[in-house]
Amino acid sequence: MNEWWRDAVVYEVYVRSFADADGDGTGDLAGLRSRLGHLADLGVDAVWTTPWYRSPMVDGGYDVEDHRAVDPLFGTDSDAVDLVAEAHRLGLRVIIDVVPNHTSDHHRWFRAALAAGPGSPERARYHFRPGRGEAPPTDWRSVFGGPAWTRVPDGEWYLHLFAPEQPDLNWDHPEVRAEFEDLLRFWFTRGVDGVRIDVAHGLLKDPRFPDLGSDDEEIVRPPDRSAHPHWDLDGVHDIYRAWRKVAGEFGPGRVFVAEAWVDRPDRLARYVRPDELHTAFNFEFLLCDWDAGALREVIDRTLEALTAVGAPATWVLSNHDVVRHVTRFAGESGLEPGRRRARAALLLMLALPGGAYLYQGEELGLEEVEDLPEAALADPTWERSGHTRRGRDGCRVPLPWSGTAPPFGFTAGDTPTWLPQPDHWRELTAEKQAADPGSMLGLYRAALAVRREHPALGDGTLAWLPARDGVLSFTREPGFGCLVNLSADPCELPEGTRVLLASAPLEDGRVPADVAVWLVRS
Image (cartoon, rainbow, N blue to C red):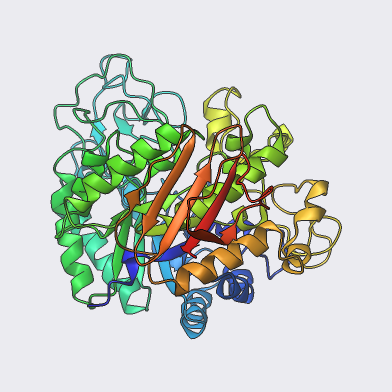
């Protein structure tokens, strides 16, 4: 059975910000295709692309008008086919993004719903409801800020857990379920290897539509969602059992990964039971502080919950929705300590059992760009929050490929990139780091090469070793060890070991603070 996904390292491409081939300052599929060699050289197994479908781009393409057509901003339908073929030629699998919770308000279904009026079959595909006088039907809040309901001219309100331009679909409607199963077949037929499911925990809503009372909706750090009216309802699992059967029509190698923001590993494990999805992002690990005790607890809880259902863990440090981990780990200490910790975190993550996801630019050590001009901000959170939350643009700035000034090889000529790049990224370009084995890029390449070859790494188990406070130490058979020093003082190597790879140089044979080492028995 082809279970490549159990220990795959997958690289996330935020298409708008990866590489631009047509010179308009926005990344596109031809640009991604031209840079696939970077991913092959890096040593990843697959690439996950954010949505490239036709869209008004209110939410960076997550407001989908037509899941079957490539948006002209990103290229043509044939560009998508060529991208998949080129990736396969280089030995890379392709995972696409599907957005089932909502559509764009430009979608043909929603336009038909507005035209048809209250009580119509067209409106039944969404959540249209009468209000409470001049008030919305419920007190639910949008993730992007403000109420989760918008009123239309005939007086009804429609639900949107994200932007008003993203009306939520009614997943109790059989046409909705049939449409997405057909959509999966459409892309699997075109050769894609997997599907990442956006907002996988949010498709169903409690039909009673109860008020929430006080509830602070955020994309990250969710509240307890085990009894929530629109997050993580039990019925979503029937949807994914049906999807698993669709994937099975195309052989064992077609897979799903869930974006499921739930509050506990045991809730996450329900999404990856044997007849449901294959993998799910481990956001508890992503959100964990740089603290040995907290990390060990998350690792243990994750492995215990997922092992119980026979699923692999899927570790992740950054993505297009959260502050880059170089900045998160830096805290008040500055970017260099953040990068030092990020190097150590990479070796920890890649040594853990299961698979891993990398986010574009982390292999270059990119930080969150926190000083983007307000006029450049494109995330709907900025407007919806009344300019109190800057949103996610800081982790989406286009990559620096080469050269000494923006656009750093991202786009042809001197066309400004859609979000401005910091001038100091001249020190972090892929071109500059490729020539330096001690760079962040050099570490990523070395670690992924070892991980691919060492029989202990990937899927499997680990065994913790005794270690002093602030230090994580574990072994994986055959013959591999990992030690991460999260304390303030250097620590000794375990007896009878030698260093295979280190995130930073040792000091007098000891592991300094914020350094990780991979070990083999000497």
